[in-house]
Image 1 (cartoon, helix red, strand yellow):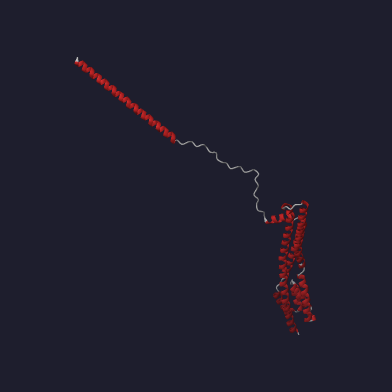
Image 2 (cartoon, rainbow, N blue to C red):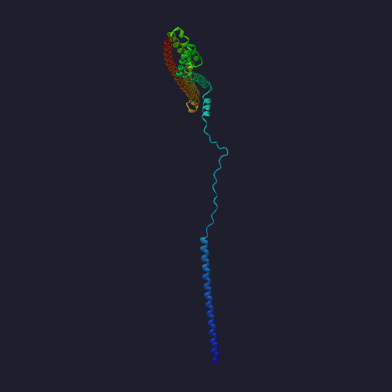
Length: 288
């Protein structure tokens, strides 16, 4: 009987121990499961917190389209185009007259420059040829040498030789007279250039005065003074003056060039005439 009770007590004890152990294992498992769930929830929260927020696409700012009819950039005009435009703006009345004065003056100036360039000769070489001709063939041979040369110096020498038979005094007079004639030929047309030099700015000033009169007439008609009202008249006035002065400056340069060329030829003619007279005096002494 005792053995039965002992066995039953042992069985109860074992049954109770296993039940407690099983209950403890379940508690441990539940605790572990809860900790795992908490850890997973914490990782989920941190992941959700650390997850980058998707940036919304920002629309790129596109530059505003340029207007279809954008004003073209004006290229710098050439000098000739500017002159032509200003000439037209100045008005054809006085600008044409100023241009005509400039063209005529330039035509005369160019003709004079060409004539003077051809008239300039080597006086020393000519004197040597005349001396050789006098020594070899006499006065007629020297006259033939002068006929083959161009320019005022050869003409003066020819006239002197042509009057050699009348005496050295007549030769001197012939040289002086012929020199004056040749100098007049050199200066031919120069007075017209000086006229156009004076006329061109005068025409420009006249256009200025008329333009100012037109401007004041416009003010009187409108009864008001505004820049836009008088700008046209003043612009015309200034343009005519500018072109008149430009024409005068250009002609003045050519005029001074021509005068310097004439002076050079005249000085050379005078020096050559003195040497020519000395040459004839020596020749006359040898033939007496």
